[in-house]
Image (cartoon, rainbow, N blue to C red; front, side, top):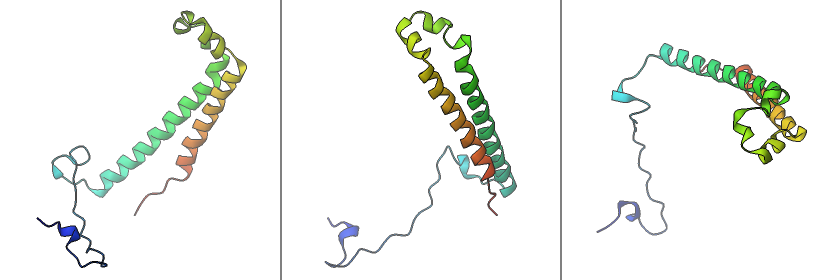
Length: 117
């Protein structure tokens, strides 16, 4: 039994096989293709939702750590040691910094959005 990838002469690189088109069921169910306008609007919508979710999550991460609800909630009442860590100013600052980073990433994506022609 011989392998076709090793059938070339010694010292010579085997011939590459042409790529085949692969369709996955999740990305392209049934093999149908959508018109370019539909794909363009789907891309625009996904970028808009990404920016919106990034902005909302960032604002929450900036404001929420400095409110009393951050430490006085039902989930942390049963874990007093975790409550002291969460109430630490350094931890609150890290969360607010992640919120700023999240907002920056969302708006960076919005500013560098390019439609493919």
